[in-house]
Length: 366
Ligand SMILES: Cc1c2[nH]c(c1CCC(=O)O)Cc1[nH]c(c(CCC(=O)O)c1C)Cc1[nH]c(c(CCC(=O)O)c1C)Cc1[nH]c(c(C)c1CCC(=O)O)C2
Image 1 (cartoon, protein in one colour):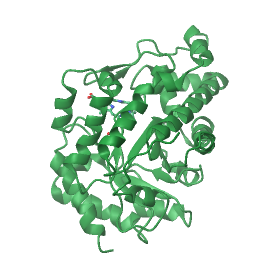
Image 2 (cartoon, rainbow, N blue to C red):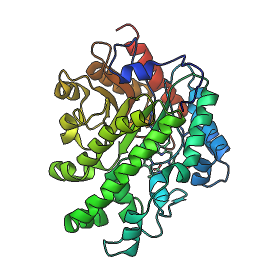
Image 3 (cartoon, helix red, strand yellow):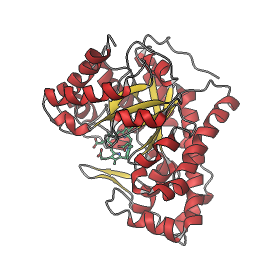
Image 4 (spheres, rainbow, N blue to C red):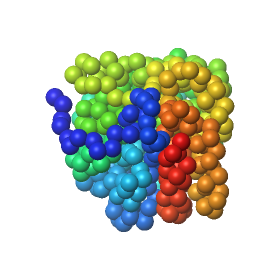
């Protein structure tokens, strides 16, 4: 049951993500639909964040805002949703506290916490629980009318696990570390359960119209190399392996897959072998060094300017773009221009325009 939409007028992102030679690098930025845009606040009004995610009309409107503002420059839309919809689908309560971020009133305390057993045993009907995401994706594809491809996403198991046990953002990761270093087997059971739900959620997003999927491992950098190998990598691999199988069983074509193991600079080499087409990276990594590590593998990089450079001058932004272009843009392939993490509140939207224009200017004839 494949839905049909208007053909893509701009498929640059998809061609680049498959590793093809392209006329210029595609570009978009993480969190491009968000708080730095005045029109975002207008569309959101005084609604709660998750209320906006659950309303396909509002979610699609917000998704389209950067595509409209940066028309002709931006090469992708990313569905307005959140990584924390998976813990919600698993039965946990998650609130978004204004200016503070996500809050779980009842995080998973330890393996004896009855909620842990409930979350593990629960037979999650992902299609039903997250139906609003799929409706928002389908509606967004219709509204996009082929302008640019639509990206679907999920949080990676380790990152979602952190939120589920910490109850929100954290600097110490004390609960997450207590779990993995005191209860490794119980932690892995939960990570595995989350990974299976990720596969299902991504597959259903593709069925609804997502044309590339991205897995956000935002807290990868909290793990050292060996803990990453044990508590993050196996689940990232699981997703990359199972998603194409799942899509096939649903009669759907495969889509390019991106992994973003933020902060895990030591894992770049293995990230190139995890089964993903695209590997995202933050600004701690020098582009030319990353390209060296990749070697001859047909992996595409995504990133990686410091999002904070957008608080700077136009000259500073130009310099950051020049560094990326010099390092990443070799042989007219292998790079999707982006920031190294999400765009932050308070950035002047015109500075993002300058960022996009400079990527264009500096890559058009090379
Ligand atoms: C860790 C994480 C979350 N959510 C997400 C991640 C992974 C990426 C990353 O590492 O940043 C992913 C995400 N969140 C959002 C998107 C939408 C699409 C897009 O990129 O434009 C995406 C891809 C919207 C959002 N998700 C959220 C907002 C802000 C909501 C608001 O206050 O209006 C938006 C636009 C809220 C959110 N959601 C989350 C946090 C920590 C916060 C709050 C604080 C913050 O942004 O610093 C969890």
